[in-house]
Length: 277
Image 1 (tube, one colour):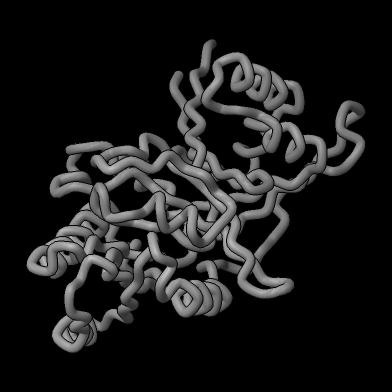
Image 2 (cartoon, helix red, strand yellow):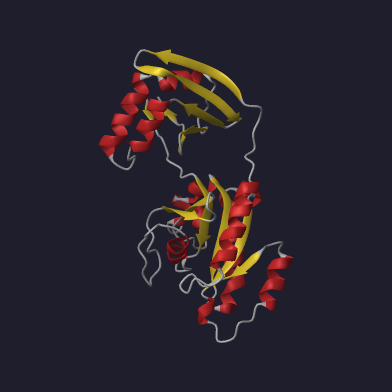
């Protein structure tokens, strides 16, 4: 009997930057963190998720991810954003970044982003989030009153920034950090459901159910291999799957009650379990 397993990697981040193409996501990620994504003055410059680390305090930091731009209909398959919206699910806080260079489009863009997130996964709107109006350096006159009133009516916290000029970024970053600390993942009482110890894996493998759809697997050697694996490369992914077979990981997950579509967290990476017979 053959089985084909699909493991979908999901980035784990504190903040996910979500916006339409050319809203300045890559510029903002560069300004806030140590990341160096490609930046160009045309849409869809970002072709894959990018991640960076921002130092907010002496001991506090934010892991920030950027996903490709969302366009209207992204949740139904248009453009590229829907291919990467799953990464947003694993973020603690959403940052809705809006291009402010065309003031007439700001409200429309906000409505579009909210609609696409809702249609992809309504639970995304339960996450804490802020709105940032970018490119205010292009404004001849800085007028915030009308937009502040609009977003307040929507129940949104809004910041006015220029990622290019690094205007307003300190306040934005500090607020994102505070919101990330307020994040509490929905959990049921953690219970170790299975442990194993094998000659090849001297430290114990533990599987803990975090909630009804999420399991966390902990074991030093397994986490090390997952961390070093490049799942975009066939050879690297094949080696990782071979190691999963070697330690009977799928068998242990099934004993723990895994179902198709459940999330498996190993170290800092997350996978979606899918079985084909």
